[in-house]
Image 1 (cartoon, rainbow, N blue to C red):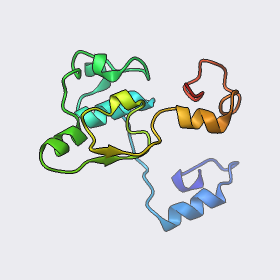
Image 2 (tube, one colour):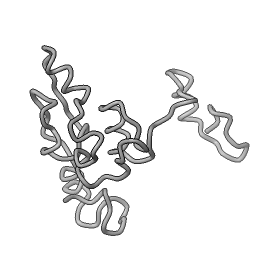
Image 3 (cartoon, rainbow, N blue to C red):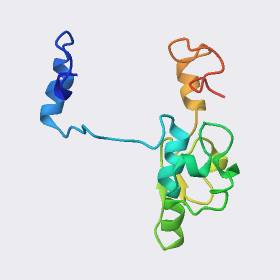
Length: 133
């Protein structure tokens, strides 16, 4: 992308124009290059290399270091805040415990699979985390 120094052969006028109008994060990081380890890290305050959560499966509560951890939303809820979620904070409904007072209906992969159809997104092969379960 031009806004990040880019390459002379690559033209990215739309993203460059968007970067000029907004905030450009040029030094952003995540704990892991996959969603569940990153979210587990953020919501429990533990690193993936310490808590053992490296993949989408199994349930993150099976990792010994975080099996009894209090998540950030759970902490807020236990201290008098009303906690609500929507989107993919956790993958499945059984992972919503006891962090939320209320959550939206779109959690996990199922909604995505229904929209993408039986071949998943871009025809990715099974098993793909992008194919509904």
